[in-house]
Length: 380
Ligand SMILES: NC(=O)c1ccc[n+]([C@@H]2O[C@H](COP(=O)([O-])OP(=O)(O)OC[C@H]3O[C@@H](n4cnc5c(N)ncnc54)[C@H](OP(=O)(O)O)[C@@H]3O)[C@@H](O)[C@H]2O)c1
Image (cartoon, rainbow, N blue to C red; front, side):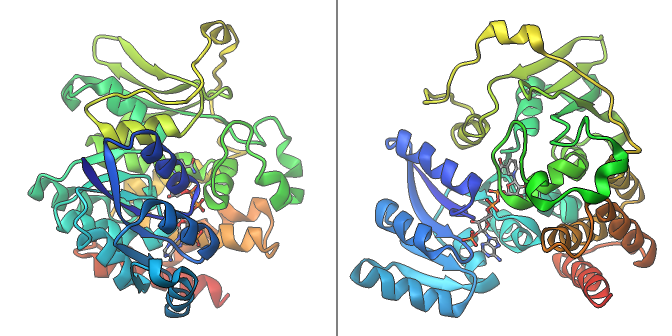
């Protein structure tokens, strides 16, 4: 039985992960959970899954959780050190990294340093510190199993084949809710409109990233680190139905694709059970739906965030961490109605131009860049 620690248990990926655990009770037990501030959901999860260790965002939330759980309360810790404890000291065999944003970096790295296998949803940590994380993982024989549906698809299509046989990876993108909306109207897009994703139900930040296509940009960088190919060999194609989850093109012209209904429980479960496959309750794909599959090129003028991600990946060093931090700030400002949808890319562009590039030798260096970008943009 595999012992799991779940970072971000109250989120979209976290709750789907727990659903999978409930469906496969012989395979998994939950030893630790970490969340931010959704104490109602977290308390429910603690009662149901009985982890020995739980982390929350701050000390007052920790006190409140203990009060609510009374004699059923496990050990409760808080803040970045609490996340680190859940990742590294909870006795887990595998850590599910599903916190949103830069807050996922420290516990993801802590899990790797402690030699825990990772089921990785928190793409931001690989964008910020992909070189450091993958180097430490290799040194410790840690497996990083992708949770993102596109990367799970590529992982499955690679089937252990080496990078030398691969011509390119092709990430599919739904195109988000504004694929057909005229660019001239982008300034008037509201957060409510941007949060209405056509095919996936996800947390707010990743939903906005999907609407700007920055999510695909972050995934290009994630793929670069997970599969060890330069970003010039990672392409993106729009596929509005989200049935083909991504493809691998081999040097002999063969294209391998992975298909299925758009449901995150499939890639999450595969990361948890790899290399085995198990039954689940996900609806099957009706093959007659394939007649309606379509593909389009990305409109780069409409969605400049994708090019910004390629540019940052090409620059390397601190640039992807700057891109990530600026994007998080801009998404937050857009959701708070402080900037327009079309200004998200402008904020990121300015940050990439303003913050001097440097090499990143440690997690501390990465966090320093992240802090600097946030300070600059928030004092603006
Ligand atoms: N959702 C998807 O379908 C999907 C698909 C592929 C990849 N991903 C990636 O998976 C990650 C999670 O996405 P999501 O959609 O599940 O996000 P979400 O629904 O917003 O959930 C985020 C989780 O992170 C927790 N959290 C946030 N800040 C925290 C902090 N400082 N300390 C501790 N916990 C914190 C939240 O806790 P509280 O809610 O309790 O505050 C929540 O449990 C993202 O990196 C995303 O890009 C998501």
